[in-house]
Image 1: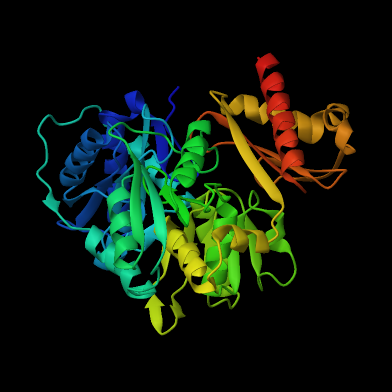
Image 2 (image 1 turned 45 degrees about the vertical axis):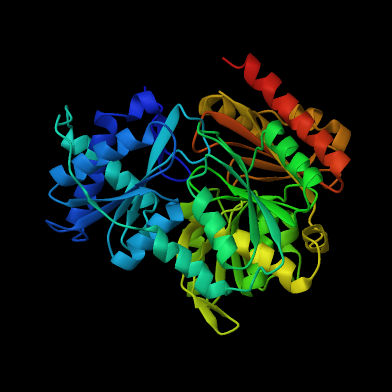
Length: 476
């Protein structure tokens, strides 16, 4: 058995089970797949980027060796945000590999694969695994490759400075929680280039697993403390590979990622949004967006949904997830400036869109957030819960034990409806919701809730976590 598997975004698992032959052989399999499709002939380039976790440089070197051994040319882009690598891949028409575990702990890491047209899809994942089995490699060559190098940051920086304009954020003071995010410096540079005063906060030399859907109490406390100690219009941050944003208002209160996505989509004038079932139910409110497509959790599903929306006639397609990552599915124009599509999760676009909205409205971020009238949505996770246990609990709640299901939520009028598109989303008799699903990236059970006010949501989240904790503890 191995922890390595394709989840919601790339191949992930324990470092001890990825470093060495597994990383090398999966990259060889990816190269075999793109060669089979004619997407990379002998001597073609493959871009390689990495985040700041401790194992990433070694794994990136093993990826470069694998690319070279496949007859291709590895190009080192260094420590770079995932969306910056994706942009370089699209612009250079070159496949790419990002070494990142995103928000998961430092003892885990992963590989994210890109064709020259964008992220691989679920079918590609299956083909990589098939090539991996056929190759059946048994050793990693001892010698290292000597890759070429490429600056992937300049074009990424220019993308946003050119679109938003040099005065977009004039007068704003923005705290930047840097921790160990790979995009921490370029984010400050972009904010400054747009006229803001960025204030660097909380920089760390060790990797910190900041999860935008399950914030650590210490991150919440840090933001509140920074807001009390300084006059800040907002506090912003990202996860480890800078494809998921964190945005807090002037009081240091973090906005949900789906609210950040909705504000971004509104700023860009989206005529269709694509978002997973875990995003706030308020998005389906009539009149908010012309078209709403709901998907399973994971960027490959959102990307497929964006293609569906475009095929249906939408011309401004914006995808986003409950974690806040925004995918731009079509070119957009605003105030005479154009922004090219980038169909991969990105943290910088939503951060800048929300902040520009604050500057243009001359209102506080808390006011803009309140105007959206979202239901109060909270989420958390239980760690070290095998996916098999989560699946057993969901099956019991879904169909196997109606008495258990209704008794579990008797105080809320039982269960009125079930949605099985990804895990199990329960609409309760009182109108509140509880959603349980297994993480696609780690052995975690995710719990999402919605209620009409904060106290009710916090109480429901505790109930959901307690139910999951007790049920999985007694399962074999």
